[in-house]
Length: 273
Image (cartoon, rainbow, N blue to C red; front, side):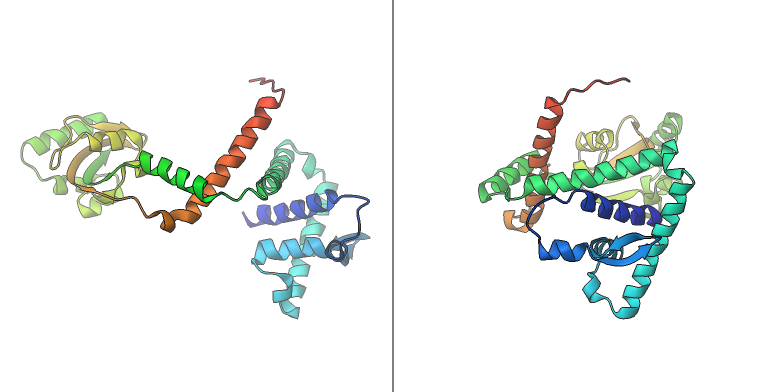
């Protein structure tokens, strides 16, 4: 929701301002960020908050805006402050649901901040990237499957479809009654990897031989499936260089997850539910 995003921006700006270290040598950029761009009932809106607001909402730097765009952006931020102040005056920030949402927003911002801080200087090495690549390749299915399915709400309906197939009716024709949008293509799902499907469905497909239809319906959270495997092909993993950026993100995520797990393990936690 747009308003939630805007209030998150304000919360971020307030958090950043509150976390500024005290007593350190003055940083020109930090000092510029403290400069007021407007005041509302004596309370300043700083340049830093305005910069953050514009970046989050417009995806651009304030310097990239023309005079009219800056005016509109500042007016929008002022409007948020005015409404936020009235909401606090009315005690809305003390309501249980809103208070919880505000608290969670603050925690999310802090989590992003600590992740950024912790991962500074921890750029994955080539060796780490290759190890992650090898691990992911080892977990990949070397096959892709081309299958058709008919999705119905009950096991009885699925069993009836299987009986009609045994009597010679065409799978593609029966698929017109499927609950899935693939009914428009005779139930054809195209080529897919097992990882892209829910486990019961993927397991059933991988157990079939080419051209075979399942003997019993398969249940997933979507309903009951009648499946026919049309084809199988072997696939090669993407080249290391092609997926290097994704590997970089995966390695960083693992590093931060390990750090988070350490902190959680060291914390004294008492669950009440």
